[in-house]
Image (cartoon, rainbow, N blue to C red; front, top):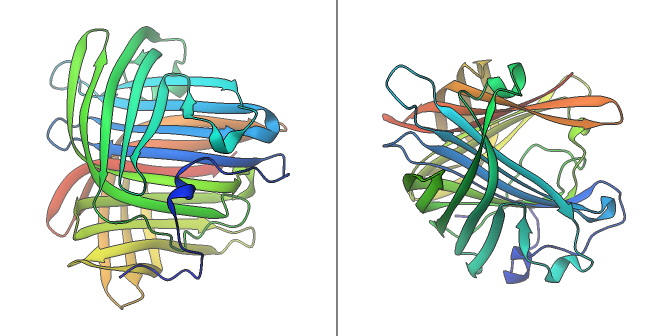
Length: 317
């Protein structure tokens, strides 16, 4: 059962970049995030084109296992800003160290990695000690295979952030190599493609979290703040092979220790517990306004299962 959002059906052309609309902050973004539950390696990779501002950005963030027990996860960040291609719909999905290749539309993708990066002893040092990093080289290949067809659902976001948006959970295999140190990956991840106006300062706050167990059991939850002070809820619940949108819910606590309650359109309830153990504060600055997106390596619990994943909490400063 696919969530009914009233939007048009996806087709293979939606997998490519889209023709831009005139708004200066119009953006087209491809994202893949995932985790290897056995090793604790967690990553996200994003390529975002902002053609009306003349740029396409590539970002790879990786929480690497600690060098020895008792130490925090290391954090690797590769970021680049390249000139935007003249014809966006026919352009490759690539920037900096990242290249996203669609092997089979709406099903399989490969992410190739090759470039320079910075490595911190812990993710929090990105904000507290930004100069305390090591220059490294990262290479690798990540292969994504969707569990279900991509779907759209009510995300809670306003038109200020990506008017069109679909997601797809699936399996991820591959390997990353950092200065000769190899990190095999065999786990689960979430692919996301969104396009439309992306005004990072247009939302007071948001909270994104979720857990992927298997093709028949996954949960995605988001809480998005409104200018009025209210909050809307979105996401979806796959339970026993039946998928439905989240319609109500709330999240208690902080990113370091939270409980997310959700109810879907079928009346089913879910409770996700999470604790971010390593948080990277990523900054988005525009017109002297600063937005911080806290990307957190998060320990998750749901349905008696435990795993690692990413929680994302955005705040305006």
